[in-house]
Image 1 (cartoon, rainbow, N blue to C red):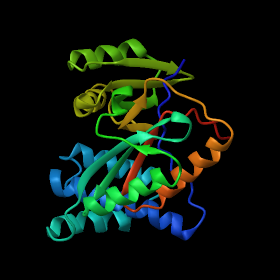
Image 2 (cartoon, helix red, strand yellow):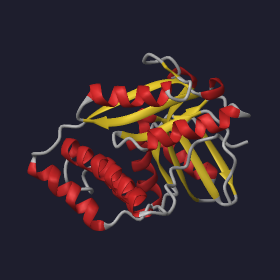
Image 3 (cartoon, one colour):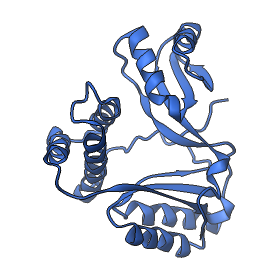
Image 4 (tube, one colour):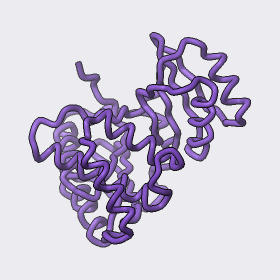
Length: 242
């Protein structure tokens, strides 16, 4: 049975406002990664991965280029990461990752999303211990043993490898992300990753029913409206979309 990670497909935005929000989030993250790790994607693996993901989500090149140029200028906002966690409708668990230039504002906005949906924001570590912070790589390959051997030779602490219909899903500790990706590229050349990122994966999922479903949808919608929110992880078993 596959591990329930959240494939970060942002889908085709249906309105210009939704597209602008997706572009803004990618732009902010690219700016931060380029400013902290270097502007050249060949030497900044995190930036390279982020740009690849942005392109797959149909973020225009000019949005990517503008964020990198802004980072080169050295001026602009000083964003810092912020993470909030707590309990959602029906006792589900949620982790919210943000990039913010005003932590007080961001905390107030995120807390409002919790309180307006009968949820409870918690302290740091209150639910994250129930998630695995994992690097995830999903790509087309049919030799699980060869992939495992390549990763072990690179001293990557592989958590799991799953094969399904010609696709391999590789899980490793988040701290081994760069080492694992480089080992895969060195061993198998250029890879078109379906998933290439670090996520929080719930150790156990839960289902919600009745009024909690509407509250959960409202909770996610309120968080989605916040510019500072980059990603939301939860342990709710979501129905698969066609």
